[in-house]
Length: 558
Image (cartoon, rainbow, N blue to C red; front, side, top):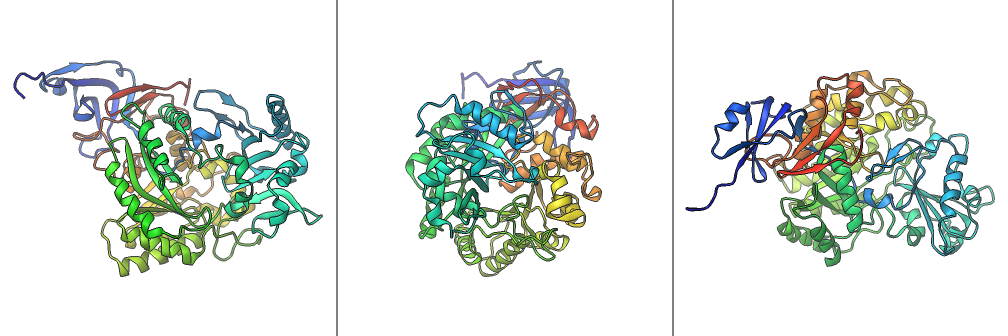
């Protein structure tokens, strides 16, 4: 308008800019106007734009498109309210380092230390991150937790998010013995519950203990911690892949009141449509509400997506796998929703025009995802749906070919390769089928759009580490699990930028540094394509830029 001062174009020189845009893969600077990229190129080129000024704060850094995490949980910020007792070291959103607990005795010692800090015996103790697959010689049971307290209820969330262990006080308080017939309630030699509860029907028996402290519980503080975790890892777009809060106004207002212009990441919120308890009797009404919520979406906050969960986890032996089954001939896993209810939910949400991501760890779950998708598309064609098989861990080559034909995406859980690769080789799948675990190379070879994810807090949020795992396929013991499924660092970086943006239906706005897109960047100390692949995950993240706003990491190294 006449007399109005034009918004300046800010030119950021960098040691290197990697754009993920094939027409200009690298540049020496990027120009930002307002919350959008205006151009990339040489400094001289960018200074030719009207009102251009130089800001050299990133002159020594490497700039990439902000990383896009398409499978994570806002409850990442909630879990840190409890005590971390996982096997591997972790860093919390405040930058504190937590050493892993390498034995049951380590777990008990940490819990005993925390128990002394709690006063009221009626207040449950909450801890999280325990992973039984690392302790094959023994289980963590109520008897172990009774060494911490026989009076205070204790709730231990497992790393997978699909199981928990409670003590005797919790069993009594929640009357678990009266529901010992529920699938997933493990019994001891005496025929009574031993404290282990697997999958959501059994875990719901002790829900009163974990309420407000589990991965599905989110408040403002949790969202803020989640946002800082994003900054610390170079992540500019997050997902909350499964919330139960959107059917009520209070939940919607929580997201809207927290994820505003000053929030340090974009957030895509998925309604949990099926897989964590009885399926809603009003699915059509739920779908209509989600359609209406889409109108409340902003540049920072997106509504109108749905998650459905079919099976459990490989490391918990609750994923549904096809023949020849588990390596040790363990019983097949568990459906978290019946195939019939799943198919009904999928059809209703698809017909409403919603984006659906489906949790499928085992290849039998992937098969049900594909069979249902084909049936629904025949009855209700919908171009460019981008429905996604998330985790897609044991998907076969034939299933990837079918996925491509049906227009579906695969979001692969590459972090499993390092976190549980040794266990998949030796315990769950065996050396043959473990080679195809999270088969990114096969998916790309067949033209399936892919992303790579962390499922945070199941594994730590950290896209650069996820890239490293997909490129090296190294396990914790140093073995390579499936060398022919390794992908290039370039392909892996594209997966965590444009790939994730595509399956969230936001690739027109985010995922690459190119004119017109939001000015979202990861600020790195080194170029991921210039270091040894095994060192990609160790590159220091200095912070992020989200819509032209600058955010600093509070962690010394990524």
